[in-house]
Amino acid sequence: MHYAVACDHGGLPLKAVLVAELEAQGHQVTDFGTNTPDSVDYPDYAIRVAREVEAGRADMGLLLCGTGLGMALAANRAAAVRAVTVSESFSARMAREHNNANILCLGARVVGSGVAVEILRIWLSSEFQGGRHQRRVDKIMEAADR
Image 1 (cartoon, rainbow, N blue to C red):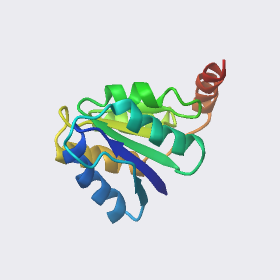
Image 2 (image 1 turned 135 degrees about the vertical axis):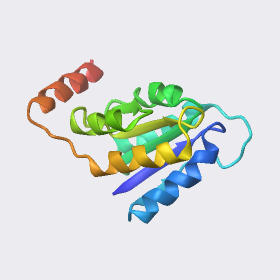
Image 3 (image 1 turned 90 degrees about the vertical axis):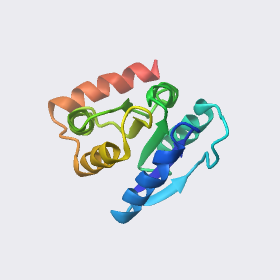
Image 4 (image 1 turned 120 degrees about the vertical axis):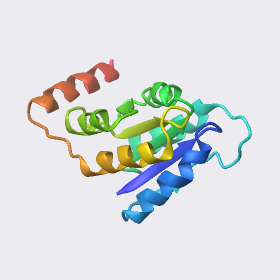
């Protein structure tokens, strides 16, 4: 799988840990920044990753900021994106299995690196279940087109 990854200054410390985990599991990673601790505007980075997923140049995305909330809000402006902010394992699994979420957003000020790696591993190992969930995802995506 090809992952588009980005962060703002708040997510920078966690990005290296999670990129290493993605690469250790054999995933290709394209890093869209930021790569400095200087303050930046998170929407700029979220939109870059969302556009990569939307265009099919990346299969999935990973966004990191202080809380993960702003990144998800910005990424979800792209029509083909289903970005979720997760801070524990159960929601990570449900976001993939039931919602077919394609961008994972994490808050570096909310979860530590150990929990973040656990969340990412569960995200990576979970698959969309389809069935009745597909009908619901279709309704979400239809609403985005309006």
